[in-house]
Length: 309
Ligand code: CP
Image (cartoon, rainbow, N blue to C red; front, side, top):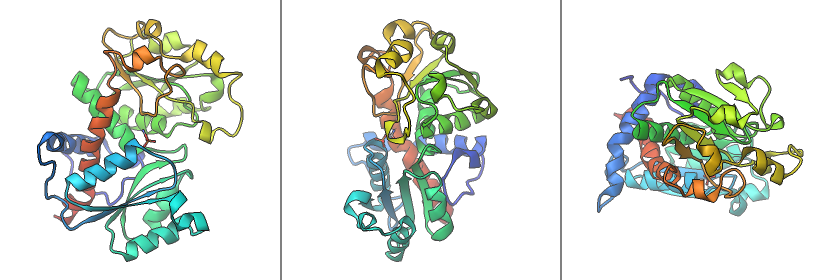
């Protein structure tokens, strides 16, 4: 098992397979804390974790907050719309003010790719990227990898089909980066306008053919249209997307028997995934959410508790 040496978690590209294995192992040990009657361990008592969110979030923000609380850290949340960011204060100035209140770690989500790096460079706090633009969402990929390993018992040799708006998806980029390191094979699929040119250089197969993508898949991961990041019209119509790419019960039969159905959320039932699939027996969508707490506990502990030791 590798030794943890990082101060920040900005992008899985900065991590090794050993780092990812250490996070998964640590998350496994924390998972049972959430099923205790008293859901708390003292690992981060005395530490303070800030959530600085300039974009909407349900799962990531809430699970980071619960993860920090279950480790006994103090928490605070700053949401852009109701903070001085809305009066024109810069993200870095906001973070420096948070740091002035002796916060140890900041979890940041921002629409601009690279925003977490600015805080890592400009403050002394540990920084965790909770999603920056189209670039990276490392803890989402970690919880996805944790779930795949928990359900299938391995990641080596697992075939993962990621279907949807790959172009604007930080979840796709982080999953590709992490899954390849963990020995999985990845195929990305979507309309040609939503497949980034040169994505194969990340070590994945790329196709517009949904049948080809799903055949033999052990995991089918559906992604929503990232309309908030689409500057242009990438599709003739949503109806056309649904006809060609929606993960329906019939299409799911192309994948391996008992293939896992995953989605990072929020889901748009009837667009990228049929309701019967999202709510069906192969879906692990809510287990991903449950696992998000354990994985984020592991990340906070390794960055704050373990480093302090
Ligand atoms: N998966 C994810 O990032 O969800 P939220 O936008 O709700 O945090």
